[in-house]
Image (tube, rainbow, N blue to C red; front, side, top):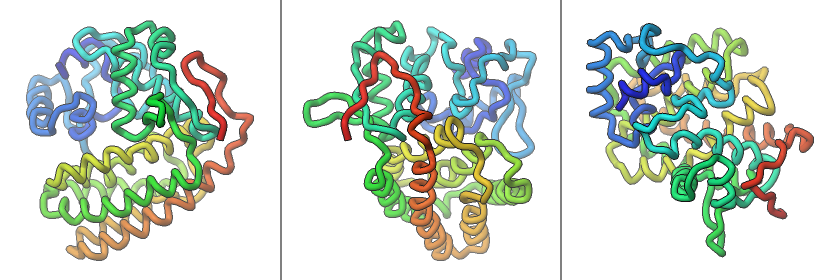
Length: 315
């Protein structure tokens, strides 16, 4: 399945293949992904990067730089690329995610399932599957009348998302540390130190990767799957940050989190897990104010144009 996605051009070249992200994309555990990546590397389809992950070898398939929309760089699959060998919902997921998150900055919205299906030319079953996947990461939910809604990123909503994270992530980190592979933390530290030295001459995509490295990849080594599942449901705020930076703002002049991540990683490397947990909690609590400040700077004039399947709701 992974090889088919590479050969069809449905997987992006230029975006590192990371074990944890591929596992999430294909909705499988990391063990089969690790084995598949190893086999593809042996066959020369992909090559190991000097840092983390793998690169797709260019001789397989054809590069598609014209389709690499910057707003979609967080996704492995190229928007609009149809592949019958993977679930149909994946063909439109990124586009729907972008439509919704780009509007949550300005208002709460309601999603019409049938209109969504009509807009993208898919069945209602596929449209429902997309919304269920978005519900899993906390972007949409059902209201009291069982209608699909995406809540505005109000101060209360943003605080609630971060509060859940600073309750759960420190516990997950403490449980993850004993299971971290030997080379992971040194690679993370090198990436963070390099990014901090170059800042602000880095991309939004690089900021996404650094966020993902700590808050998703490191924490994925926590063996309490219930905690990981609950954290997955809080992913909405991380996804929102990507679109806020990419669509409305730019890389901030001041480091938004890299130094704080570096402190956390240094504490783990030093063997001081208590300090790492405390610094992670402080980092998440400080992030609330930064997130709200960014949202407040976005002018309502930047609100995206209407699409048929999304209706704005009154505050």
